Amino acid sequence: MAEPEPTDPEYLRIKEVEALEIRVDASAPLHRLVAATAKAIKSGHTDDRGYRSTRWHEGALDLHISPATVDRSIQILNTVVLALEKQSFPVSIDKESHHSVAKIFGHEIRFELVEKYNQIRIPEDQRGKYSYPAVRYQPNGILEFRVSSSRYGYPAIRDGKRQKLEEQISRILGVIVREARDAKLAAERRIQEEIERRRREIERQKLAEQIRNEEEKVANLETWVSNWTRAGQYRDFIFSLEKAWNAAGKDTSPEAEHGKRLAWMRKQADRLDPLVESPSSILDRKSEIERHWY
Image (cartoon, rainbow, N blue to C red; front, side):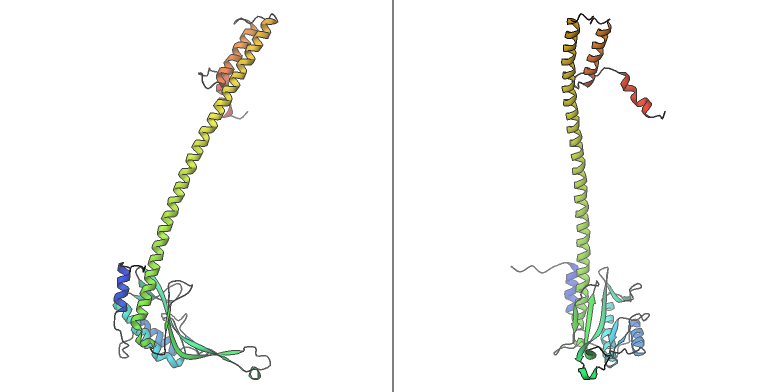
């Protein structure tokens, strides 16, 4: 079953843009950024591959072409930039990366126009004794418009056998706007993922707190049971001790020394027993001296 077509405002905007009929008008005034780009590319140095580039030229859009395609490239670039700004998508040069970008749906989408090249194998007898390159690069006149919102991968539209870039301006705009929509959706997904991550973290913290509380209760229970058991052992011992002392003729009356000792032992048993009220003891004042150094 086919997925239903999206209905979000950004997608509908893409459909509007792709439906436009945009033609290259060679007589149209150059956008200020395109004019700066034309000046930079025409006065630029041609490298050993036959290319000129506006990279790092102040105020110039990204262009990497041969001198033979300068006029075509400037016209295509001007048409795209004017069309973008007509759709209220401002074009600028990023201050940090110096790349040309269009701001769409709150995201900056990078774009550039480049000329493709052919690799031509150099015969071995023409490479020279110390010349290691086996191929040379030759611009082939095929222009490619690249679009990207990140450094990894990019959609591109290029000259075809049936359609040149001049006939694909609305498609170029569509690709740029689609990339902006993808960037917006990706940002929204990241926000939702962060919200979900924080929700799970809060749940884990609550669970950890519940576990700590439960462990504390279990530890308390174990302490109570242990103390209750020890209190019973104390009483059994005290009973046996009193019996032995009586058999030995010891005075175990409350006023006698052995009687006082037995009373003290019963008090310690009661202090351990969680089922009875704990009698006071000098040990209760231990904290008074632990806060001081001696």
